[in-house]
Length: 295
Image (cartoon, rainbow, N blue to C red; front, side, top):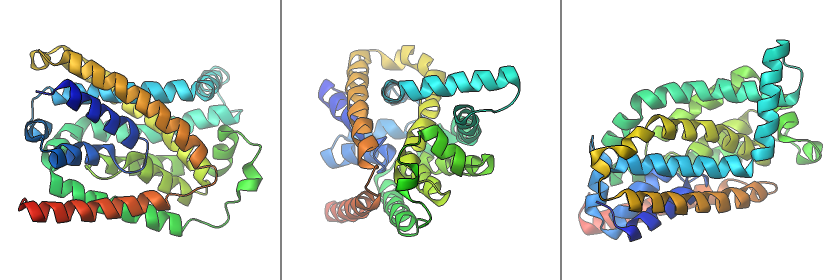
């Protein structure tokens, strides 16, 4: 079971950490563990529980926030996609971006549908989350440090996300970024973080890597939520649907605030603070676990 207070806290955690490159899945494991919500933590690892429906609603809420914030970009992408099908060629940056997003979505979508639940039940444990969160911090710091110096923000100052990505990303690179997303199936590895680092190594600057990551996350998160939405109406959710919906509402609001902030943040800042945070919090959680005698 989950209380209304727990639903609010978990909604806030999901909404912010899904988009900040610090792993929502890792935090959804560690926050209940730190707060002593042992029943809730156990529900995450069970093969059948209400928690799957809770995640579904949180994912749909997060994707909805992304869709609303980038609505004008998505409108251009969708128009470009259908126009390219009609004329049978890609003749604009928006159409190119549409096909890049489609290519990058397929690998994570297939693997996610096949293994997401299995990996969650196996790795939704505090120690696993701490280890992968530490790895995530290393990925962010290494990726940021070795960012190719050929990227110059001034060169892209007046360009749209479609134009910037079209100039830098090939179909092969987009697929590689899509494959990188699979790492986010492990609690502690950030979807946005790993796709941003992949984008940086593909030649994008921080701003466009972040925006491409958020655009790419939208169909992945939305699709995962909609596919499993029928679980919300199962008997496992009896007595907790109100809590689940409240958590979803809070999550959607938090996600909108997060993407609004991060879209501006990455115009002139880097992943380094988030990498330091992941390393610091993972070490702190390990020390806490040892002090409690859990490890």
